[in-house]
Amino acid sequence: MALTGQHYIGGIPSAESADVFHSRNPATGEILATEFHEATQGEIDAAVSAAVTAFNPYRQKLAESRADFLEAIAEETIALGDAFLEQTSSETGYPLPRCSAERDRAVGHTRQFAQLIREGSWVDARIDSGDPGRQPMPKPDVRSLMQPIGPVAIFGASNFPIAISVLGADTMSALASGCPVVIKAHPAHPGTCEMAAQAVLAAAERTGMPSGIFSLLHGRGNEVGTGLVEHPGITAAAFTGSLAGGRALFDVASRRDVPIPFYAEMGSVNPLFVLPGALEERSEALARGFVAALTQGVGQFCTNPGLVVGLQSEAWENFAQLTSEEVTATSPATMLHAGIHQAYLNGLTARKNSPSVDLLACSDEAPDVNRLEAAPHLFSTNPQGLLDDPMLLDELFGPVSTFASCGEPEELLTIANALEGSLSATIHGTEEDLREHHELVSILQKKTGRLIFNGFPVGLEVCHSIHHGGPYPATTHSHYTSVGTRGIERFVRPVCYQDWPDSLLPIELQDANPRGVMRLVNGERTRSEV
Image 1 (cartoon, helix red, strand yellow):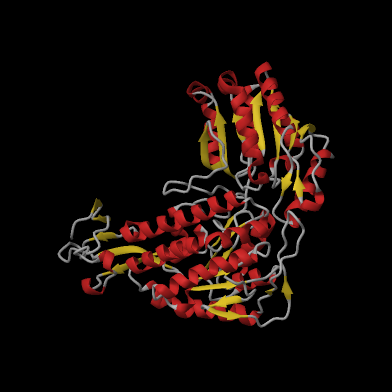
Image 2 (cartoon, rainbow, N blue to C red; image 1 turned 30 degrees about the vertical axis):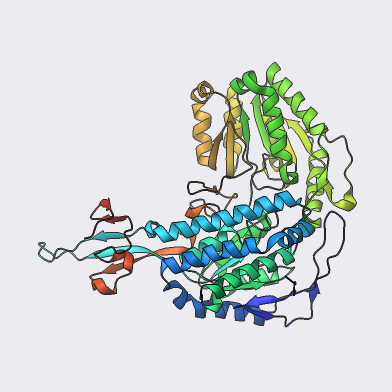
């Protein structure tokens, strides 16, 4: 499948601008051949206009038709074959097995959304029957359900070029809900984005979807993304990336004449609290597991464990030594692109210059900066050091973490209280540790979206129950998830029908319940007819 470097607007290729850019292989420095065009304001307008036009016919499609569309996307993604994986690898430096696993994750969650909307109960249909004879006033018949909000702008993430990009949960949840999407491709892997877009468009054509439900735009700067969020035809936006980028776009969304929800997932420090019981049982395994999590994907996960907290003891010192040995033996590896690599180097320099930390360990091998390599680093501090230098509580994207040694159990609580919102928080210990440190658990419940016991935050399980979110600055809306089928809730709103003719109600609200969905009828959950 040949790359064109063009945008896709309602399925039609477009390339109005002569301003072009190339992607680059981060491992070799090679500039890849395809020229990708910058989107013009006219192309942004055209993509959003196509989405607006497609919205009504698309949202009126039966859920079974949208499910068929999603399943076709999964099939077309697989049909891209090895060429798709090779393109992703060439633009990211990821090994082919990682690219294959990410494709399988994307295909899996696409099928999960198809299953969700085919079953149908996610619309949260509610019925309260009327009673015209009620005194002193008649009771109206009131019914409600979730309905799609309109065209959605989606931003591809740099660290998951398949699973949090064109084929990501943001895209699939929006399409599942009945919303058209306009996607801003990530400039670090535009070829991957174009191939994925071709799979979506092929699926749309196969299943007879309106042409404007999907558009792809390229742009290496901020103008295209800002233009999308500002556009009055866009009703919501989803973003995965840095705090600076996410906050800037969130502010744009909030300043609009008609503000829109902007769902940004921006990463976090993802603290690990290692309690005495864990150290007594499995220090060696814990050290190996932690360093594997720290260095997986060269630390380029928004769930990377950037802070490890424990109580000072001989067992803690032994754990720190074991972890240091693992870090020392880990080789540097190539990061995704020059921007991420430079930010990592800047962050390392800032930490090395901070009087609040000491360097505990780093790789024995020197990184090759020409290959954008990053070496894992481990720093050490104490609770006062964390309080003196809040930078240490911020995410540094890459394979770096800080050990914080506490002299008293109360200092665990001091650190927990100092944390900002985080995507995850992990406790390693025993059940007795949890009971003894129940106040720590209580604090962490307020700080995070996912509490993990005796595991690690990377390797997110993509399932119906997962919540990938958290209080700001982890995300802009802690109620919502960017992974898992609950992500569909971001792109719908409740619509209420009062005293409406049964035959003209949405099918899920009709008396006969022809789809057989679970509904809340007069306060009781049931699939029965009214």
